Structures are given as C-alpha cells and as structure tokens.
Length: 166
Image (cartoon, rainbow, N blue to C red; front, side, top):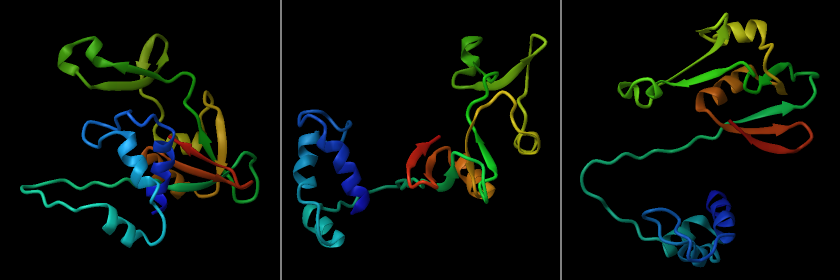
C-alpha cells in the first residue's frame, strides 16, 4: 500500500488527461482509485482491481531499490568513499563509427592521446579516484557494492535526510 500511495502522490500532480503510458490509461483514471487508497491493502486491491489471466508465457520482473547509510563527513564507521563520475571519464558511442556497433559503448580515459581502460573496481578500492569528487561516505562497502551492481538506490544520511542515487 505504501508503494502504491507513493505512485499516487506523483500521479496526483499530473493533469487528469495526461497519459500514464501506452497501456495504463490517463492520470485521471488513476486519481480516482488513488483517492480511495486507504485501510487494509489486501481489501483495497481486491475491491478496486480485477485480476486477469493471460495465456502463453510471460515475464514477471521486479525492482529492488537498495538503501545504504551515508554521511557527508568521514567519521566513525563511515569510511568508504562514494565517488561521483570522474572528470576524465570518456564514454564513446561506437555506433557513431559504424552502424554494426549500434547500442555498444566503451568507456575509458585519455592517456597520451590514446583511450585506455579505466581503473577496475579493485584498483579504485585500493587507490581511490583522484579525478572524482567524493559525494559522501558509506558505512558498509558490501552494501555499496550491491547498490553499484543494481545501478541505483537510496542513501539514508546520518542526519536523517535521504536521497536517490545512481
């Protein structure tokens, strides 16, 4: 129910005629059901939604949004730096050179007018990133690793603030 209400908060700010996407109707359709979103989650969804059985094979996916703990200042258990993008990072869209590489990219840095691979995770962990700003400090390097694998998540700061990161 909490996740549904968070979606409703976004939808509430949209004009009623604005399409949500190609298959989910308009914001107005959702605003009506969002206004009733209260009480027991199971009872709410059973009353306001109809399940449909689809034939054939399907794919059900989910999204996991990891949350890590951070601090703007390095102290106590907050010893793992979380870096921003390095200033010298170069990302090359290879399709600009040949259509056979559509959707392919490569990243690296310049070294004497040559594109070379960027440091790997072990090298970054051991030596840091001189050309990247430290955004904040994390208290758990393993949690940070899983957030990096996921690609995005949340940081809960030691002062109570929270932010989405990617």
